Amino acid sequence: MEKYVVRNGVTRSLGVFSTSRGETLARGARVIVRTDRGLEAGEVLCPATDEATGQLPDPQRGQILRQMTADDENELSRIHEQERVEFETCRRIVSELQLPMKLVDIEHVFGGERIVIYFLAENRVDFRNLVKTLASEFQTRIEMRQIGVRDEAKLLADYGDCGKPVCCNTHLSEMPPVSMKMAKLQKATLDPTKISGRCGRLKCCLRYEFDTYEALQKDLPPVGAQVVTAKGKMRVLAHEILTSQLLVETEDRTRIMIQAGDVLSVLNAGNRSN
Image (cartoon, rainbow, N blue to C red):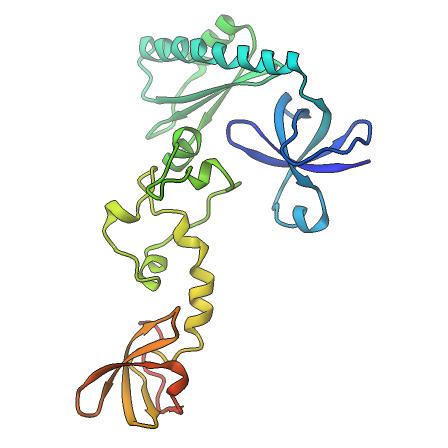
């Protein structure tokens, strides 16, 4: 039985799904799958090889029922139109109940088994009356999901400063931890307005090359180290990591750039934390 990695849901969850009849599916094929939430529309990304599944920390499991038909596409369009109405209804009821929450998005699962409400809130919210009212209004199960600002961007953001669709809403299945250390090591500007993404937090792309920068930096003499070259002793002031160059100060206090390969020996380790 063939298995594929499939992306489904507004949060773009990844899972391993088996075909019902062993059919072969191409990348990008739109399919109807059965998940623990019910029937959902999904997109085939690749065969579920050991290499592919090894990249998924905890994939959901399910079954591919069929490739999407014209009727399925029409039903999906109808559901999306219905979601707009449901969103406005939900927002009205939230306002009437004076709940301290911000409605972010509504997901109406393809099979109609449930409606998922995504919202932001500073603290825990007692939404029992809201769920009861919405369940009566929509005649289906209501699931509430409190999310953070990065999840909000994943649901709603479109393009980043780079001009491309935001990573969290395209290829990222989960958002990596990002720190100022990563920006400093890559000598990125530390202006918060330029290193923050649509969510207001540090851009995920600062994480992508960090491991490479760290690995390359380990091969360089630390900042502060005394080194010996063919031209004499020098002190390392800074790194140009990608070009394997060092900004050094010579014994006559001249500052020059040299190649890391010009270093013959390191007299002391300096301060590795810089």
